[in-house]
Length: 316
Image (cartoon, rainbow, N blue to C red; front, side):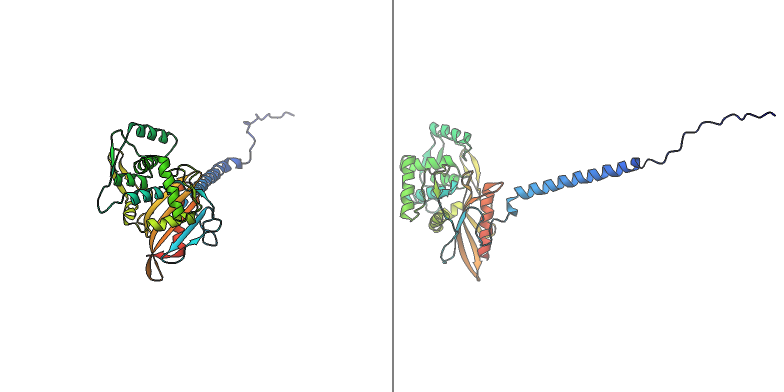
């Protein structure tokens, strides 16, 4: 018996089940992308919250700043002060005393420009050095002449440390003699926990309390010339050109100015005056905050003051 040989058919590869991993890859990549983007957005949000000083709650349960110290007076009421007052660096808040003494000894009336001072080569060299150590200064040139009004504006608006020294020498002959007058005046005003080491406040040995500085704030609040100077948004001086006020609250929420201050040792400081309405009556609110902390120290002081004023009154 014979058999017929059937040629083998083509060899077929074994059938494999579909690889589900291939289908999962795009989905997995999409999930990873979503997680990465979400993480980035969260990081941006955290960064913004950490660096946006306006979003922080500066006040504690008792209505006082959580950090630093404060003092405030509303209208004719008795002054109120936060607990734990002790002398601390006050940065450029010190310039308020400098301006007060200049105006006390050399009053400005009407539109008068007052005395003049001439910038020397030594002043220019000193200014250059101050800039290298990160002091706040305005550009000056040897032979430049500043009027008293221009110098006070440079002192109070952009907070020029070099001009604080120019004014001190112009008024008292020497910076140390002027500083002695600052301390004598502080004692006469009853500011017993205050010590001035310089006319600008850059020196961390210039210290005070919010309570003491409130005494000075109430004095200068009665000086129409001082009030007009600190309520100025911008001004021009011969060489530096346009100078701008560091008080970002000026003209907002009833704030009418006074003086900001900041450096690492002092934190953010603000001596302020605002017009508010309390129980239907328009009143002055005068206050001081010291030692505020934030990404931007100047703004930390401003926002702490804004929250403090809002705590005690409604806008006028």
